[in-house]
Structures are given as C-alpha cells and as structure tokens.
Amino acid sequence: MLVIACGALARELMAVIRASGWDHLAVQCLPAELHNRPEKITDAVRAKIAAARGRFASIFVAYGDCGTGGALDRMLAQESVERIAGAHCYEFLAGAHAFERLCDEEPGTFYLTDFLLRHFDRLVIRGLGLDRYPHLASQYFGNYRRLVYLAQQPGAERTFAAQAAADRLGLAFEQRETGLGGLKRALARGVLVNEERIAWAG
Image 1 (cartoon, rainbow, N blue to C red):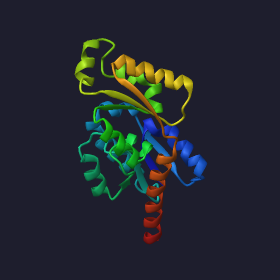
Image 2 (spheres, one colour):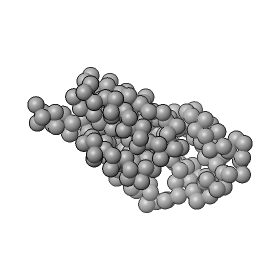
Image 3 (cartoon, rainbow, N blue to C red):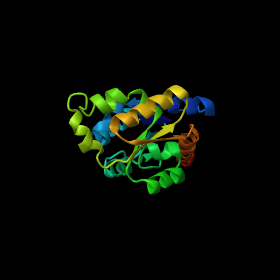
Image 4 (cartoon, helix red, strand yellow):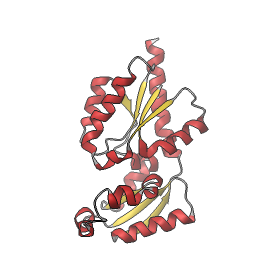
C-alpha cells in the first residue's frame, strides 16, 4: 500500500509505521511548503496517484482538506482513493474530540506541530514574508488570540521555542501534549479500510 502524505507529517508517519509493524506501507511525501499554497495540493496529490497506478495494490492519502475547500475530496472521490479523516493535521494529531474542544475554547487559535515548530522561521516568518515586511503580521494574525503547540515529542527546549514563536506573533501561549496516538488511530482506520477493499477485490 502506498501512503501519499504531506511532508510535514513524514517523521511522525514513519515513527508510527515502524512502531506498528506496518511493513507493507510505502510512504511518498509532497513538499510541506504546500501548506502556504493549498490551491496546489489537489493537483500535486493527483499527480502522485497517477504515477502510482499499477505499482501498488492500494493507495491512501494522509492529508487533511488543508485549505483546498473540498477540492481534494472531490478529486479523491473521482480516483476512488480514501484519505485520513480530518480537516487538517492538527485535528488528527490532537484527536477529533480534543481538537473540537480547542476550537470551541478559542476559534482564533494558531496551531504549531513539531514540524512547524522546527521550521517556523522558514515556513511562517520567511514563507509569509514577515522577515521583509513585519507589518504584515497584523494582517495575517490579527484575528488570532492564542498559539497552541500540539507537542508530539514534548521537551523543555521545544516548549521554549514554541513560547518564543507565540511571543513573536503577539499571541498567548498554550501547550497540549498529543503524542502520536491520534495520528496512529487515524492512520490505522485508513489502513484497515484499504486492506478490506483489497480483500474484497481479491
């Protein structure tokens, strides 16, 4: 089975796959920079699917909607390919119910994962041009009130860096330790569905 995934999930996906003993899964990742260009995600995933046809018994997509406005789901329905459940990686990392509570508590929340924290300057500061035009921060983040760090592998150094990121954006800071359980459960459901489809096709 091929898993087509967002590059922002690569490290976490491989950790889950190794820990679960899913040796039959292969992973191909698209650039994490697509987070900043969601209109390109659908075509990029479609190209990966087309290249994989005939080479794998099954294909599964580890992407949320990620700002495609439903375009990704419409394309996947045409291709008869399933994807991981959730609007974006924050939801399946935190777990659907926990994420819903976070949204209810404060809709104006900016979320950081371990990946986004490691690449905060490249993807957020330089990626949005805030290194050159810092005044744009108020336009990008003016409707946000807090930053929540969803920590897959918590540690004092990461907490300090996440706090610094919140300070840089002028947001209140919170940390929620998620581990990889939410991602594992979401991926396991997709693996099970695809294995059942393969069994029925056989």
